[in-house]
Image (cartoon, rainbow, N blue to C red; front, side, top):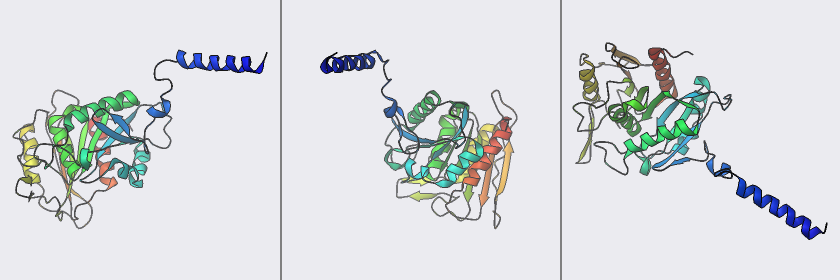
Length: 287
């Protein structure tokens, strides 16, 4: 066979293979996302890290961490503490990207997108793109990310099994009540925090971070619990106040825990790990 005819036959065979391929079969590189490459959804993007020993098939739970003001999902992925956390707990670690490096919720200084719709789309994408368990997801976040977590518990409680905000609560005006049932929520805050003080503070002339005790009172009233708040923190470690309401119709009884430390505006992976383990104990997850 002449060389030209042989080359033509190879070309035609390759062309037929390409056109016969199902839609999306050649989009593998484009579809891949994770630590270095963001996963894109219609309203934004996120990054995801899996435990080092994961087989790629066994369904996992997920910790969804919301960065603070001016933070990035890429920056959270560079944090070795989160990588170690994912390995220890055998969970996916998800870092959504806030629009404008912040979050938009009632009372926030900026409204750059509908973040409630963003999290609806995020959970849908996570549970269709990856083998993640919709019933084993916990939302956590720091500072403004923590405030967004409080609002997710209020307005999108069905999306997560539990919530673990750190150093951030509602902003004024505090909701009188929430459309979601009282949650399973673990909050950590420093008594020396001056960025987001426990008693709240004004931000300019138009906005105000709420008093954390007043934020908690919304859930206490909804769950029929006494409106109390811890008075002090130890020199080291955490002091915690836990309240549990009678069982409701649904997967779990409401549980409200406020833990104080004597430090400032900070976040630690150990606090997130503690909340995940406490959530699993409360919901009866096997190890």
